[in-house]
Length: 68
Image (cartoon, rainbow, N blue to C red; front, side, top):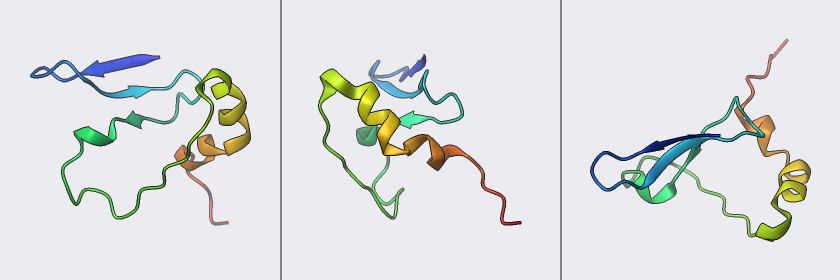
């Protein structure tokens, strides 16, 4: 996992997840208002986050899908 920190406040503004190296996880609080048109929040058990990740299909969201 590669974290990128804000040079002003030191928060982890975004990172590359180790289970989804094609994706980027963004800290929601770091975005300017109006940046996103839709946000979906899913609660999960942090103790079993790998199971949640594998079942969620979230990695598919960072893949470019062919329309062929």
